[in-house]
Length: 505
Image (cartoon, rainbow, N blue to C red; front, side, top):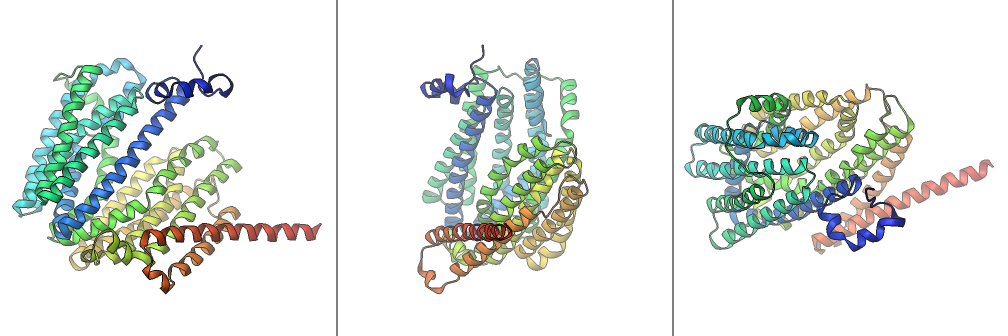
């Protein structure tokens, strides 16, 4: 009989006695899901913290202009990355998980990956002559292009391991790669600071891990050979091209602004803009983690028709977003100057206004998430593709109009306008499905509570005597004020309703 690790009466002691088995072996469906979620989440946290710390040192030591060269080069390279895989990674995971015998196709697909990588690097090389005349930036593009393309081979190995539900290896790889890059980069920044050397540090960390990973994979899982099998290549590309199209759209959406600014020779502005973006992304990372848990809940309660459970799940999802973005927006606007000076230095102060706009844009994008997830739940994901595609087209047009005159502020405004447009379209498409109400009584009361708490938090932050308080401590105090005010509103509302009910009796 298969051991059920979730029967507390019989098997809980076995988990405590064998934690190594629980976290490193697949013992059952639920245990495997928990194990994989733990390792991937753990790797994301460790890698995210190390990358953010490294980024701060890069921005401080190199300055906005040199960091702008690095960001522009990376954005340009990222535009080509999807063509080095054509979306086959997810197809590999799906097909290999369904049929173990299809693992025999891996060497052939690995050979396809080598060919696509060579062609993609050639495209990057040719494209670099059209995007910039600066020889130093082109040199950085070649180094980062090599690093990103080699990293794609690691992702391909991870796709194989995901099919076998062995995500712990992916987690180890991510953490080791991040540590290597961080150590090499910090050494370069403090000893031989230059953007070229920084790019080489990134490349060195990836190459070392890739060599080890290929050897380990070749010995432990499957021997790798170069195999020319165009029929297999064609079969997998036909399966993956919809994912490749979506990836192209997503890549354009993420990198088009920095690439266009770099093309216009606004390199310093690229540094300011990406510095602002990093802070916004870090502030919203909690929302990104939180939203993941709501998707399976929405999927579970979707019954093909309106029902109370689905409405309740949607309400709590929307409430989570609202109650998180309101204090973030207000706090970021009031503290934006101090945040920039604390994380970077006064030379990045021109990024303040762009960061404020980007916070609004990120908040609207987060607000669209429940509606986007609803479309996925009801199998209407093609609408997400078209909304995103339209957003990218408008973004390119707006950037062409605004960037020459407003630079990074034009890029931030473009982000805001596109966020408003996509939010409107997602709400419209999701609402017309007829499965939920947008503004329920539950959501409205939660919005009032969050609004009340945000106002009190903003008044607290605005006090002049707090200007001398250190920023981290002020943020912690503001979070406490927000939660205390929120709970106070909920308690008062409960007490009022209780007394009204008592009077009716």
